[in-house]
Amino acid sequence: MTASAVGRPEQFSESLVIATLRALAAPRRLVPILVVIIPLLIAQARSGGSATLAVGFALCASFTLLAPVSWRVIAAERATLLRVLVYAALGVIVVFGIGGVIPRWLRLAPSLLTAPWNLLSSLALYWVGGWGLGRDIDLEVRLVAQRERAERLEREAERAQLLALRAHLDPHFLFNTLNAIAEWCRVDGAVAEEAVLRLASMLRAILAGVRAEWWPLEQELALVRTLFELFRLRDPARFTVALEIDPDASSTPVPPLVLLLLAENAMKHGPGAGHEGEVRLLIRRAPGALRVTLSNPGAYAGPRSGSDGLPTVERRLVLAYDGRARLSIRGEEGRTRVDLELPEVTS
Image (cartoon, rainbow, N blue to C red; front, side):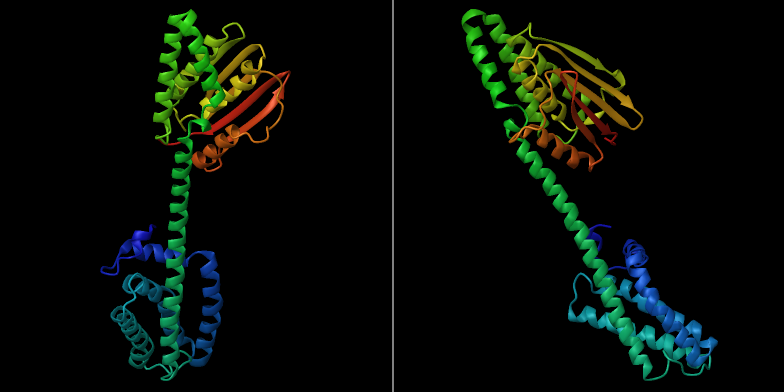
């Protein structure tokens, strides 16, 4: 139920009624209600005989079911004096109808809930019970709506934060690439031109990615391949790349730039740090998940103080998958290995 569904006092909203009944059935409300009603019904039966039990049950049902629904429909969103009076008048009709007219018509003896002066107590239970339960449900609905809004704002804030290029691509990589391009301009114009075009394409894709919540894996891989190519332009003999990509995974939606940041981290602390060898990227589909393994030469040195690369990835995964994604990093025979499991999402 959304917050907008709360405020429809002008009409008897079926969805509002169903939502209210479901909220009343929640254990945190149902148990206290039963704790009050069961002794009340027992006392009602003892005070007027078993014949009055049905009347008592009808009154208790009005206190706990009809009253909260009528409060939410009539007065919850705009509790003006007129609406409160309408709610109060409905309570008078219901309580005195059930507890006054029906017992007289059936010629039942006065009981705990239906004795003339006790009807005022029953009316107070209707008014206060309906207001209290209805208000509690409304507050819960608003709290849920506020939490959802806070989550949306958190995602928007994260997206705004990701607009900073440093969150996705280390500035040292950009500076080193630009310095290399400047050098190539003097000695190899063709290589310099190729590097500029690839870097420009990569930056355009990054700017598109930070504005999207999801995009296909193939778009993410295009960025990763460009990153590898730029590093190889700078030092083609230092490392090789081995890619093993499941063809069925290409259209799988993933959070933009997550794999790019992991790949950049692998290049920065692998070949970029002077470690020679093979960079391996394995992506395969599994039942209900996408599994990614990325490894690079160079022993894993543990979390680095002040690093914002991997914490950024972890925050994005939490926001995108509600904590269901799994990310682990470990050393493996002089190499660093990253394992990432992304649950399937409906695009």
